[in-house]
Length: 145
Image 1 (spheres, rainbow, N blue to C red):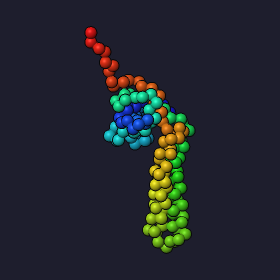
Image 2 (spheres, rainbow, N blue to C red):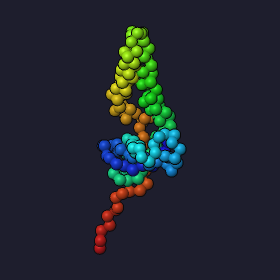
Image 3 (cartoon, rainbow, N blue to C red):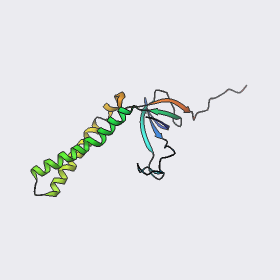
């Protein structure tokens, strides 16, 4: 997955990049990220030494994107269903407690994922990389003579 974005923040060896939308974005409505929605932000390893304001090319392996999506969406969903089944087992007559048990296990899954956030950043599989600087916001200084 290669995308273009603008560096908006520096965080040590990582940078926060605001991804630019493709021309088709917002027109099909599939992802619900029309022009009035928030920008897509991504944390990427800044191996190109880009500065804030630079337009950069960002890449992430397709397998990494799919694995990250699985971790963020499927694991909490499994937690929700497991919580609903456990809730049904322990509180079969009270639908409110069954639902609460499902939500609690889903929240626990999100919490565990958040606790491992730094571990995911260290893993190259889940980390986006800034490949190169497409356009620098900083003009080079030429001495006047």
